[in-house]
Image 1: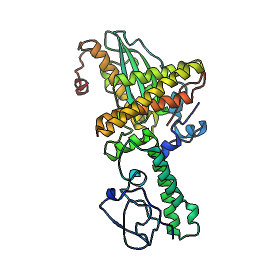
Image 2: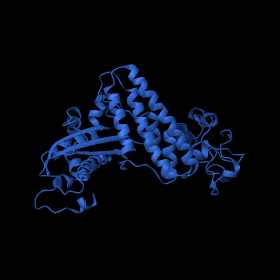
Image 3: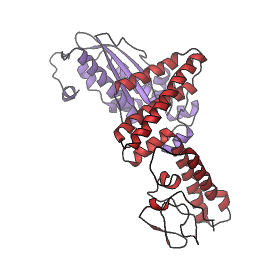
Image 4: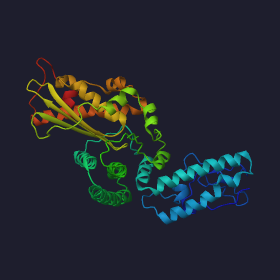
Length: 220
Length: 171
């Protein structure tokens, strides 16, 4: 039997819905990775409505995530569900460990990155930014177009370094604004800022991929 | 040259299916018509946006971080005499905008307004996941026409005898 490992979910944020543990048949917290019944502690499937916040940040859906704490919780959980520890177990436990392990990895990758975290928060709030969404905000589009053309025409490492500094500081600014928007539950503003951030991220990638004389990318 | 810019972590986090990095993989993923427009873009560049005979359309798809600029030069009869585009985005977005520049050159504004993304998608054999790229190109030409008409201060420029369509009324 897998050792019981504490999940990040604080008691007061436990969802009301319960589920039955596949192993001990007793009620267990649906967001917990291991059966919350101390005598059992069996690894559980990922609940259909469980979010990354439930498992990795104690259930609070927030943009302000403590990175140190997130990493600590992640490493502890990842250790507990590592498929290698389940090689001698029943098939069902091994399969659950594999599922949990990759789900937790995805969760960590999503929450540690401010852009992915913002997209995820919007999705959870029912305000997901879809592929077919379009914007015509001339100010933003003009800024992005100019930046991309500047990168395309840059001749030297020094020019690129200057563009990078500017872009990095724009990103810092947007991240601060995002924290404020999510903090005030202003989802319209958060959506706008996430769009802006997405563009700045693409600019960062273009900067990274820049080489003198190289032309446009064919990303995604 | 061909680069997949979406990071592994983003792919994992969003579940968006992307091509593996590398020229060969991108070639297999994109239809040859898309590759052709990507490698030999038609009418890439810019026109003077302050020229009163030029209309500029600037649109973006935020989920992908794509940005597309399409500019038209219009003569007194309301026909498109020149057209340029600049797109930062995926191969399908570049091909869609390149294709539409060829398509609208010489057209009347009224006819150009009627171009549907489905035509672009069909011509370039875009898969369903890339349909939004053709929609972006349709929006770009509509937005350029709208900009040109706005510059003309409501002075209606359309071919003789043609009545404004519902789309124009909404534009």
